[in-house]
View 1 (tube, rainbow, N blue to C red):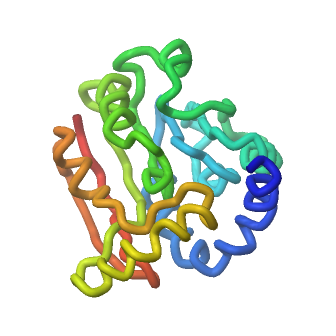
View 2: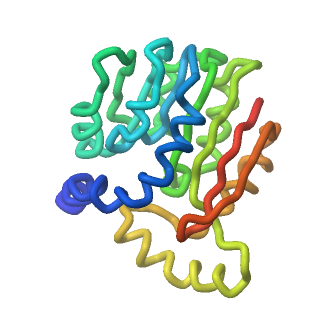
Length: 201
């Protein structure tokens, strides 16, 4: 498993390059002006790092050591980013992130892989300040019934190839059901269906 994770991390950026050419401006729009205490969930190979302002104090958590190693090569000199090799649902993260301490939590292409999405969302509510915001950029379930059936059929294989990624998650529905208040949302397609949103506690 670790051998595959190492290969996955090595090939991830090249595999995602075309998609990231489209998502890059969206990431910049969502992240570029943020200030304060920020948690970058599942920071992967550090795709978000270049968009964070020097005024942002970022905690970046990533469970894959191979992905984290790649991300640390991308740390901007002026950025205030601290990385941790830890899963967002790990209890020890509570010692790093105090309750009601975060201005923003960032989830970009990560909620598809977190095994216990409900637990993660519950932790987000605990960590965010009353004025804090949850910022989302995720691929989600297909809208048309036939496409959804195809996604469900393909998902077991996709999970194996994509190191735990799920094609068919109802992430937009789950966040609202967890009690977050919608501030803005936008659905769009880039091959898969994507969901861009900002929530408050």
